[in-house]
Image: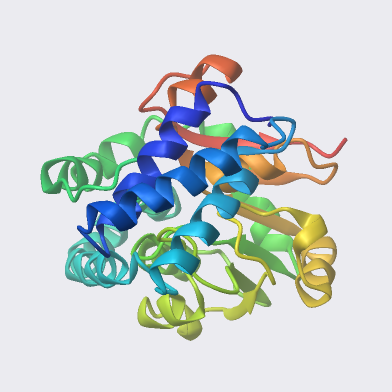
Length: 289
């Protein structure tokens, strides 16, 4: 997906919010924003939004001498998710279709995205999880059955992680796979926004259910040309690839291989472009080209 002009105000807002997480020095903030505007003035809009966001956040980290400005909110997200996990697991086990319920909680966890919305809004977060079971019974049964059967017969499954905190509910989903022969969970190789790194995945307990692999890049999505040889080997060898979040959708929805996309539509640009609605919970099966 190429970058729209409507993406640029959102990227600017992200830059301001991320910078203010570290400093309230107006002179420093102004310097950063001038550099961000210069970066955007020369941006190639044929690139995907996550590629441009990567460049902007690299400026912020460099100028603020802070390798992970979102670290406090990542830790808060993981702790909040762990607080919810026990009751979510019980609800999943009691559901008529535990696999569908686990899938719904995994998508509910996608609300822990602080690129689209940098403030912590407990009401929005709680609402997402309170609606998980209701959403699970609205999924297309035939689509869920295909995903379930593909996992059941797979020798290797790759899950592309998205945000810290969200990874806790990805763990619950993996625990409810029909089988877990060889499951890999991909994370970013270094911090960008609040995307999960290896440390965040371990804090979420992913290492108990899957092998964690860094994708070799710091883009809030998955650009295969930027990824490591190890990740690419797993990506191409996997029988099933499950992609979490909007950033991975934006960067992989035109790839040639079959991919399952799980995410909440939070961006009006994506909603309008693909004829979705903001707030939709997606279980999207993209066939191999």
